[in-house]
Image (cartoon, rainbow, N blue to C red; front, side, top):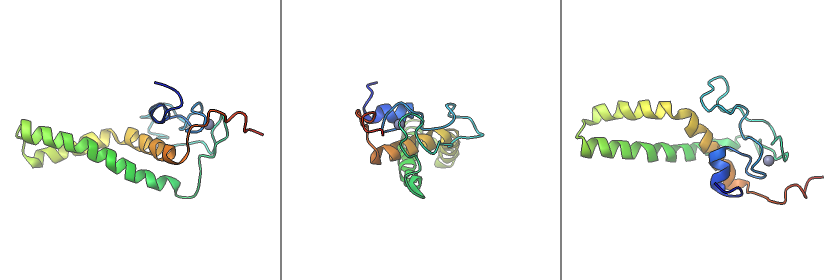
Length: 128
Ligand SMILES: [Zn+2]
């Protein structure tokens, strides 16, 4: 994956500005103690991770989209291919989404952050 792209930053959970510093404190995505813990600033370039109060509330829109993108194919395959009853499909979707909650939450934040902060290959020159 090429550094400098939107997907590099999102998939690797890196700071969108320098794409070197980690976006989250704990590298283990299923570390239940600190799933969404983020440092206040990028440890490499100093990009502020607390852009403004409630900034990451917008990531809930992204997580909703991801949850729909996961749920609809499960629903379609189970209903149309395997002809499973809807009352059995919904608990399956609920379990899948619950298990995927940590990565959905982290990737949503990463995607949301990358909408507003973009890669700057010259960030070192702008440091004071
Ligand atoms: Zn950075």
